[in-house]
Image (cartoon, rainbow, N blue to C red; front, side, top):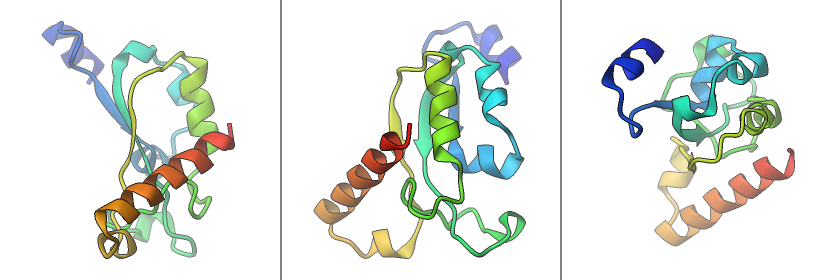
Length: 121
């Protein structure tokens, strides 16, 4: 991916780093810290359901950031801070509870999850 990004040679092309994919890949904070911040254009932050082995969690089951603690959000965010990432971080919860919320309640829950995640760093 980094080779493709280099070939394109545009500052607005980069990697969207997703905490769920990072977790499921078995990556570490060191994997993030080994990359330059400018490779990332945005970050998606979510959590995984508890009590389910990660190889059995379907992609469409994600929680609000720091909701279950399954994904090591503190390590994830500390690693991004270490490399100086200062781009956008957004919530990406794919779950029924959030879908049933009103837009205002969903936005408030997302903000609460972000605050909780960032308070761990």
